[in-house]
Amino acid sequence: MATHFDAIVIGTGQSGPFLAERLNSVGMKTAIIERSRIGGTCVNTG
Image (cartoon, rainbow, N blue to C red; front, side):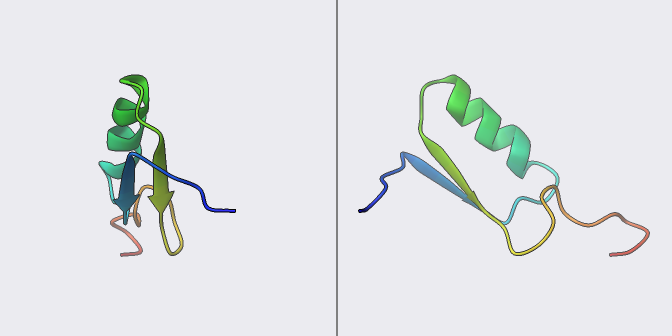
């Protein structure tokens, strides 16, 4: 069964979660694709 999205955010970084939430708030079905950490890596470990 396929799932359809209006927008896909690839690699969240610092603005990805905000962008996904904004798209969702205007009624777009949004998916986030991230390899490891949502929101990117802390500047101390990146």
